[in-house]
Length: 611
Image (cartoon, rainbow, N blue to C red; front, side, top):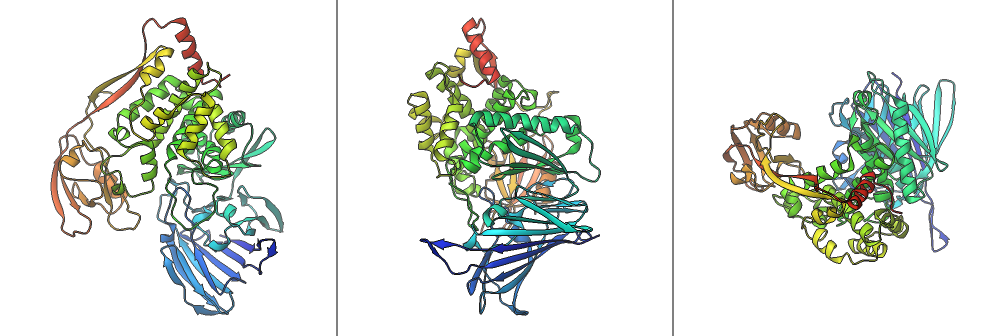
């Protein structure tokens, strides 16, 4: 196989107070992919004109710290061909001292062992037919120069293509195609790159170009690509109809067969796909795509942490993720419905019912407020949530449903959440961070009403929303009942409301309780304890935990070994695993609903924009 080399050259210049600063570093990377060795990527980084003491770092994603620094191997530096020390400043930043600010840095990204037919889409991956490069987790960079202009050159085999939301210039000689792009360091680190044998489709919305790029497995299943792309285009049209504009000049959907999950970027998105699922239904991914694409407006442009810049620092706390995630879920469902491609084919009534059922099925949603759950999302669970686990996605989505009804009632149906989204976007997108009070003020302006008590009860505290009152004008009500958790045949499920997580600092896997009323807490097991073993299976990784939890059956007496952090003495416990009950929620029709109620219900079910 032909080794694949990517050459990156960075030209850096800056000004201060109108005065041209001294020459800035010139950085050129050589990233080598050997298709005969898919275990990792070798990188060399030539630095010229930097400060004598230079700092290197691996940037941290603004939402998720994947800790890919764990896979950096053989980091070394040399000056004029002689080795020079590299000093660690933290687990993902380093310092090099040189005589004149010139050095060559080399390292290897030793990719984690993953099933390449089923991996997280945001992880860099190599296959014989291409590569997926997550730039944040691949390139070390100079954090003091995150906004510097960058020219990137790629050399790859002729039968490979490159796709990224970057301006690409193509040139080359016989047998070799060369690519180059000009951007800045922050944009590069936020731009995933696909290389290889790719399929590309295009469409435009209001004159703005969009591309759908698909990287298949070697044994991928054929599916209806026309319907797949058409569904994405329909959703994009509805997003433009809502906002009237886009925060980008072009956009790329990067779809990777064999992967799972999705991750938003400023002008692109990576989506994991299983071609066999798309063969059964070409719209199977629309829920995931709609959610991540809507984040382009509501998270990337309209961000509670403010405009994004590459940084090696951990993600900042925010109390507003219920808005960024939950309202995004609300609009992923709403805009799919307007596009004629309802979420998984469900009615809006069914979608609301499922969210209410999810809310009441988890006691943490009535204990941890959306703001508190948002704030705690990037912390270890032991810091603020204990044995409770809330879902600010569900909480925020229900808030979206409720506020749309409240605004509609206050304005005679003339205004709704669409007006709030447009106001928030115009007021804050790419300008500054927003806060909960900012959201509250925007809603009050739109509805010309006071929503302070709503925010106090349902955003700052965790009081369940009274949907019976909100749905009554639609001739609907919510019915709650407690029932055993069972399958369709009535066979009860065992109480397995416990899981595991890896602490950010490393060490043993930790316990995560999912409900304080579970049998596991009754046995003395709590969130933050360290796992030893479960059902005689040693817990050293999440796959270990998954294998152990799947071995437990209703009525089993399960041996458990846990540790209290800081105490090396194991605690040996036994847990008798019974079935359990939970609250179920259903939305039902009120008998003898009036024509006016039925008319309002029908309009609400269509998710039509306010008028």
